[in-house]
Amino acid sequence: MFNIKRRTCAAWAIAAALTASPVWAQQTLKIGAINPYSGPMALYGNEVTRGYELAVDQVNAAGGLLGRKVELVRGDASTPQQGIAMVEQLVSRDKVDLFMGTYLSGISLTASDTALRYNKIYWETNALAQSLIDRGLPNFFRSGPDGGTFAATSVATVRNLVAPAMKKEIKDLKIWLEHEDSIYGTSIAEAQKRQLEALGAKVVGVGAHSARTIDLNDTVLRAKQAAPDILINTGYVPDGNLLLRTARDQGFKPAAIILVGTGDTPETLQALGAASLEGILVVGYPRNDITEAYGPGNKAYLAAYRAKYKSDPVAPQGMTAYSGVQMLFEAIRQAGSVDPEKVRAAVAKLDKPENSYASGYGAKFDKNMQNVRAWVTTSQWQGGKMVTVYPNNAVLPGIKLGKLARP
Image (cartoon, rainbow, N blue to C red; front, side, top):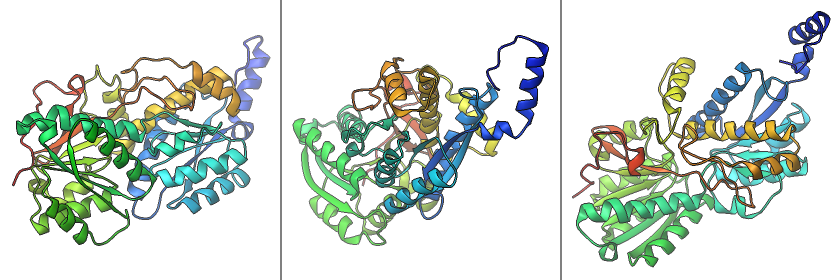
């Protein structure tokens, strides 16, 4: 609704007329949502955007933002080049006021740089690559965790869950690191290697592959020959599923498998089957089975999702996107504007403790506008379902670490 002061009945009549007229549409606050909505990653680009949509529904039900109805405008980008084109198109054709995204770091890299040329905010909720934030772009903000957080949690999972379960010291473990070769997978694998070796673990190999590959036989053979205790893979759903199938077909059965950023969705269950996934750990975005104390409002998010989409969430990325957009809206309210400089000043003042949002995140941004209170969790495939097993304050009563994948 418009922010018109209650002075006279005539003023109220004018406000009502404006709300019902085309002027409301002209006053819409348009947000360009850049994600892959076609191609192999479309399922997850749509899932991220569902999180955006639920946050937009919520703010519009409360009267909008800055006196304006919020509208999402989708920009379909499956490659970095398409990210550039979509930003340009949404600015020139759709007159969007700001941007948010995205499931793929490579797209975020180019789309946010293009948004800067138009002096538009690019609010990143899900892309992880460290290089995105290291650029220090004045229009770029990241509300979700970075790749370093995923790396740190995967290493903590080895140290605090896997090593004790195997009754070994971390220095006695041999680990193979595999990753898809974009800035997303590469940055996480590099951080994992540094952190594991600092703890004394033996990294016996690092492999890289394209997320679009159709053959991982040589990759799995190299890892198998290194005879690691633990395989850690960072990737996307298609290449992650292919890696697991290839390992199964080659009889490669390390004592533990940890997937980072992927591997926790119904698509993976359908591709591999419950028996092949049993015991596998996944370091990923917080899920809806976390405790309410860890992620207040996560059950309400689930209820809203089911009511709108008539299904359970496809992947946990949506709830992270939802929490991130809530932070964006809070900053815009405080700034009273979508001007990047004013929003940047407002974001710098955000200070909410961890466990403030449905995802378990807090809000505190560093000088490069990276939220330092966004953390990830570790889940495990148990009986064909994913259950959160780490950290302890996110784990539901009665849930514990199950047997690891073993020969």
